[in-house]
Length: 204
Image (cartoon, rainbow, N blue to C red; front, side, top):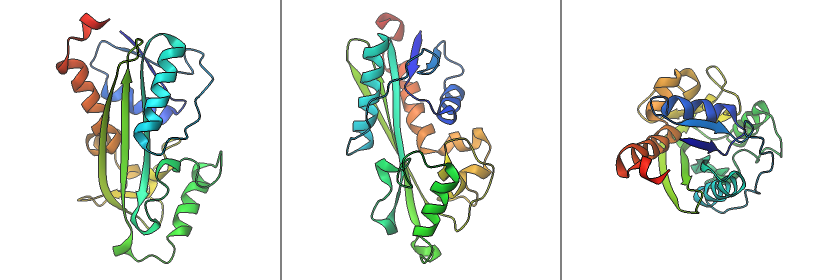
């Protein structure tokens, strides 16, 4: 089975490939299938943006498509950056600039007021327009400085510490992070749906 993952983010693609590695699925990025156009992510929620990307990709490729939209919501900032997590430091901002912008916004915030959560909405869309949505959230807090090894296009991994842990996502191995992260949880729901909730082969 071929599924197109609506992303140009190699960090996300790597995570998805790792989670689906034991399934008989040929997962390709939009870049790999030559789809350069992207819909404008102007939804008010993660679900709206993910659905928009998945539907667009399925319509353009005539294949099954997966899309996700994720972001970090910081309590002290009223839920920002939320759906604009990738852009709130400026369109095309580097990972380093995003981290600086975030930490500067929290510069006077004490450790006990740095609560935050990561949220993901993942959408599976069929070529005929049917779709399924999977959501997940993980609570934690923002570190006072970046820690760990950066993953491309996943800047917040350097400063997010999930509840019950001492390490940032960036200090964790891929397996450790995927076992508890928001995206890992949503993608595993999607995986369980593919393998258990309906007869996949009968829908190909």
